[in-house]
Amino acid sequence: MNPILGIETSCDETAVAIVQDGVVLASRIASQVPLHLRFGGVVPEIAARNHLLTVLPTLQAALDDAGLRREDLGGLGVTNRPGLIGALLVGVQTAKTLALCWNLPLVGIDHIEAHVWAAMLRGPKQAGTDWPKPELPFLALAVSGGHTSLYRVQGPGRMTLLGRTLDDAAGEAFDKFAKLIGLPYPGGPNVQRAAQEGDDRRFELPRGVLGRDDFAFSFSGLKTAVRLKVEALRDGGVAIEGQVKADLCASLQRAVVEQLVRITLRAASQQGLRDVVVAGGVAANARLRADLGAACAGAGLRFWPVPPLWCTDNAAMVAGLAEALLAAGVRDDPHSLDAIATGAHKRSLA
Ligand code: KG4
Ligand code: ZN
Image (cartoon, rainbow, N blue to C red; front, top):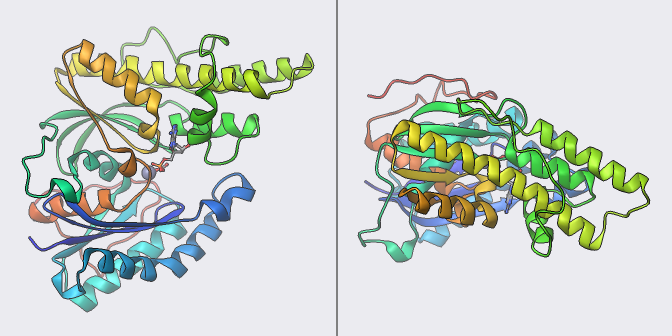
């Protein structure tokens, strides 16, 4: 199949990528982080307006990187769910227009399904080689700023939800904690950096709801516990700086990671799945990758962390899943494809 172009505008990154046979030929990300930094989080209206400014130049840059012209493309994929509605609409309208003008097949992509399918991608250096991939069906832990869910993945776009968070997402736990102690947005990478010098056993923090045998995560108790701890320290005249800050970051990171690892391992065992994928922004966390990898090895499971480059929002994952869906005969009508903020969507495979 000819190369597939993917567009991602669901949140604060304008991203365009080109994938062929699962190989990422180009992946451009125009980050809006500096624009949202001073607000401490993503401002939806600002995100949408900037997608509008950057989507076409980013698309042209991706084509140039890959040394391709639009005539070389075989199809288009665009994230159309879930996400910020104004932001999603920019990508969706762009992709619909291009699909009609360039006469290319189009498929709308679920952002979380794309995060998970990134485990199937490889870089240009691996083109033509027999690169190992997770075997279907596999277990996927999708951990991002908005989601913390476990799926049984049977094929492209065919994922059964096994369990998810009852309250906050893991990324949200990192981001809210970072804000509390004055670390800049996005919190996850900054907490990880500060945690490097910290003692992860200094502060005892809750690790989700215990005693459940389903796959429900919970991070709101942790959020409250760490806030009370920080307030108690401040009330006692302790500044959240230096070693205290590092120890708090390390302790929070450990509490988040231990919960993720424990429930993922239980799901793999209960579902009888041998391949475990971890995907989404929080999957870039080095402690999570190391601990989940060690736990999988200890349980005789194969571990497939998505390369950090494709964990946080990007369009390679969108183009990759679009390629697999288009190959399976899935198409969306460019006249009627819509952006869906919540992600609720049903589609039958051709
Ligand atoms: O997948 P993503 O880029 O966007 C969403 O779909 O939400 O995930 C962003 C989330 C943010 O909460 C960010 O703090 C978190 O991923 N994140 C990390 C790391 N890098 C990004 N969390 C922990 N450690 C990291 N290294
Ligand atoms: Zn994401």
